[in-house]
Image (cartoon, rainbow, N blue to C red; front, side):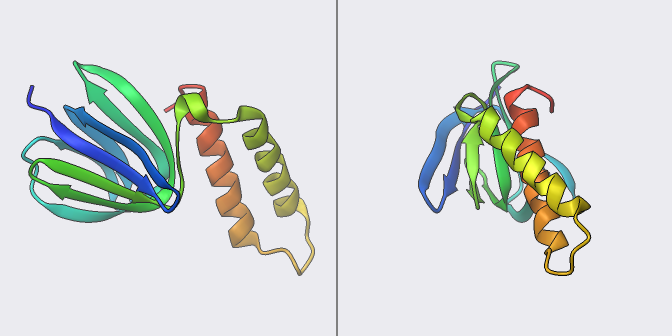
Length: 135
């Protein structure tokens, strides 16, 4: 299969720069599968996992916290708010964040920002799932 370049970039710098056969990501409109020669497009991404496939096998999985995906014929660029490779995720820290968000959501006080707590819970759960290979 033909390969193409993928870059995943955050405000802190590049996370991934590699060649792959397939990129799979969760856009706001649904799951996207991008292969070489795909029609150019830009799509907003959900909190989720980005799978990079090379040689028929998933070569890398990256947890992202939303952002945008840009597709050009020989290049895919993901501009993410935050991104971590599966092997770099601090699972203990992610579980603490998950518990903190769950406590905030259970707290019925007026000063709690529930939307923010829900997003924090989604990010933490995504990081845990990606680190454990649950896609």
